Image 1 (cartoon, rainbow, N blue to C red):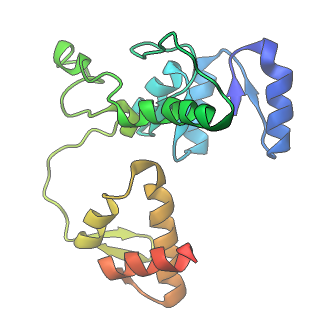
Image 2: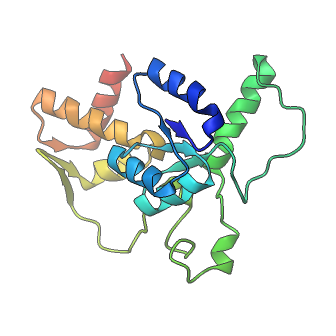
Length: 194
């Protein structure tokens, strides 16, 4: 948790303390990138600067605050409280997660490392997907993910996929299962849904 704006430093530090975190107040983007790289969060909520950092690190990012570009902030009635406010806040979070933030740039900058066709949308983590044969199994420490389970896991939204993977692996270890199948994935989902 942090901000670039020193005018808000006291408020951000107090909020971070409430959550048991240490706030990062700096305009040094290299320090911000190093901190994000060290923390390896599941998702970044930040500015356009963090979007580029997330793209380089392969971490999904939703641009939810200024500075931004290629983002639409229409001049309209936008309440932040009540039922209407809930819709406004929901739209503010969902828009950058489900819309391609620079899809129209893919054609303009086809040869650029960040915007080429294989790079994919930045809000999905930016990991370049190279075509290679799919392995029969994927191993993760002491468990083996069967290819059908790995394919099923990829259907889970990217911003909770890491948690689903960890929960499934924890469940498998707890039950003494060494190979994770689609059935194991759904059994773990049912177990943690209770």
